[in-house]
Amino acid sequence: MKKNDVPQHSGLLSGNREVNYAVDVDGRYILESSVGWEAKNIALRQAWEAIADELTVVLAEIKDGKKSALAYHMVKNQMDPALLSQYSGVARWRIKRHLKPAVFAGLRPADVVPYAELFGISVDELRFVPEELISPLAGLDQVEADNS
Image 1 (cartoon, rainbow, N blue to C red):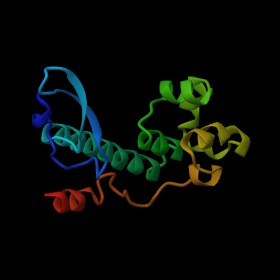
Image 2: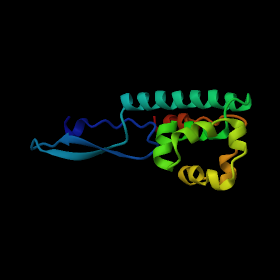
Image 3: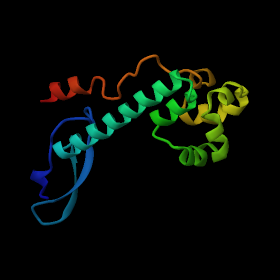
């Protein structure tokens, strides 16, 4: 695309910019900044809505005693047991066990430190889940309206 055609549709980037390749007047590729473009904003919104839906489901499972708080933090950070294992160094089979509420409740603080460190929260926060979901899209509708 030409430099002048780089889209500038504000949206989910919330004031941030991204770099795109464009062609200048001399036909050379250059880097051009953009505040976003509509198609990408739609795709990002759909992805965040899917994550919010998944968080709602996992919160219900936690309330029903089917899963531990670890499941919430995994979904919130977009991780599955395999990825969490790679990043935390905890064996995948252990992570799957830790998703059981009774097992997770019985873990020593030292056992959950790898998770807390990875998620950037305290051990106490790791054992906590919100009563209601605060949507990852909260406030973005207002930002998009302000940018329109």
